[in-house]
Image (cartoon, rainbow, N blue to C red):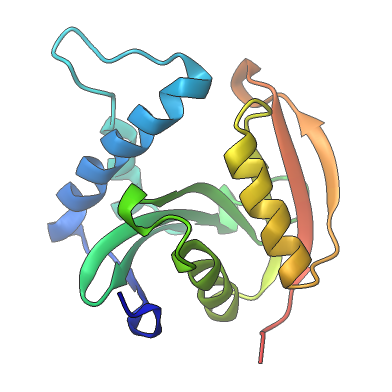
Amino acid sequence: MDTDSLEIVLIESKDRHIIKNLYSLYLHDLSEYTNEDVSLKGLYDTKFLDLFWRKDGLIPLLIKVDSKIAGFVLLQSGQYAPSTGEDYYISQFFILREYRRKGVGKKTVKKLFNQFPGKYLVGQIPSNKPAINFWKSIYKSCRIIYEENIGYPQNTIMVFQHFKINKFR
């Protein structure tokens, strides 16, 4: 695997099924921390994802390594950015298991920050220690100074970090 070939590409509406398929894998992994169940049809609810192709400010991005799908990022901006003053909210970030712990996540974040510099909000479920550890390692390795607080969106406790990104060199 050559992480130098890593790309972050905007997913067009005609390919939205890719994100919907990956999103089910994301929810499956996340269910360890959320206790979310599948429907009686054995599926997770992905209907809201259609908004990412209908609303300005919702940005669906696919992560590719060696032209193979490695994950996705759902980025919210504009009117869908937080009311706390950030330009962007990384609402979902997912790397397929076969690409984890190989530098793909870190490289993705750096490319994302270069493509979209500004003020960010990132959140994690407090029991999701791997996600918290991942983001804290990003902040440390990139020397990002952040503020952290607890929030309760949709009656779910979340740990949030707020920070500003200029382009990396």
